[in-house]
Amino acid sequence: MKITAAVSRESRSVPALEEVDLEGPRPDEILVRIVATGICHTDINAHNGRGLRVPQPIVLGHEGAGVVEAVGVGVTRLRSGDRVVLSGNSCGVCPSCLDARPTYCREAMRAAFGGARLDGSSPITRGGERVGAMFFGQSSFATYALAPARSAVLLPKDVPLHLMGPLACGVITGAGSVLESFRLRPGQAIAVFGTGGVGLSAVMAARLAGARQVVAVDIDPRRLHLAVESGATGTVLGGTDTDRALRQIEPDGFDFAYVTTDVPSVYANATACLGVEGTLGYVVAPAGRWVPDTGFLLAGGRRLQGIIGGSANPHVLIPQLVDHWRAGRFPFDRMIEEFPFNEFAKAWSATGSGRVIKAVLRMPEA
Ligand SMILES: [Zn+2]
Ligand SMILES: [Zn+2]
Picture 1 (cartoon, rainbow, N blue to C red):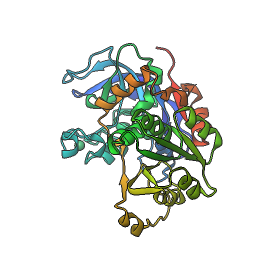
Picture 2 (tube, rainbow, N blue to C red):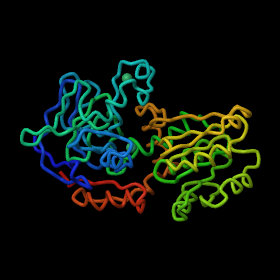
Picture 3 (spheres, protein in one colour):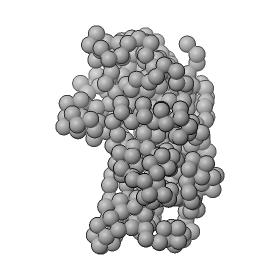
Picture 4 (tube, rainbow, N blue to C red):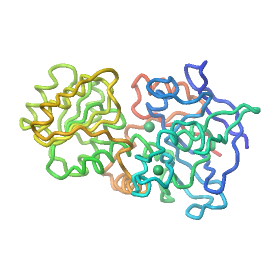
């Protein structure tokens, strides 16, 4: 079928809309009419080849939400008309997948960034030219997407689909880090470094989990304001004596420091603010060299923890987050700004510059 997709090509500074051909679903796949899809910084890094290499041309996008239009013959869990949000792809048979920890799938890198199904094929072409697809098992910068059925999370019938896409990556990463990776307990203290979509989701989840202290650190005062609205109990403007400001707030140190930025100095500050047996969790590697203070880590039994996708099982955590959102306890939609799909470049630059926390592209009404 003919679809419209934002295609990344080496020659382009921004993906641009093209008409391309999409295959029908294989036995274990579903065809989804995308209603809306978020833009994540991983899309931008993949397009620019910054720290991530994907084969180009390729269709990116990995926060897609939409309606199932067709299912492969082997799909029994989903039906045409179901409303879904598309989480990342995984193999389904490795030890991590079998333990319902798909973000640590042994095939995760290939499944997310290979530009193809795990068998190497791509379902998207343009006039005979192969175009990479299946980015995070979806390539949802498009009016339609094929996805492995196992990565589609079923949503209730009555939720507004145009808001649900970010649950697939940015929101589940932040919330899952707090709820699943840290298992933060009531009364604990957390400092969140970087209050983009992931950081704000962590702030909201920390309040949800009963944190006594949730301190947001950012260099952008507007974002700190939004962090307070999202439940932060305190803020620190980054860059100027962050260390001391955090010590004043929590003299014994924090139970958790959560780093969502790649600035190496932030890792140093985040380590220094940890209390005894505190954990520093991070979702992006520092850009450039950072040498941890291993003596300080050892002395207090402190830990560094890399976290992918919030360590969450999307089929379990996303419906829980939807319930919390409906009850008004998890207002992640506040950070969303919508753009029509044909204003792709505008949404892209608003994300890249940081003006918008979570840009969501809305497809034309079917
Ligand atoms: Zn993402
Ligand atoms: Zn796996």
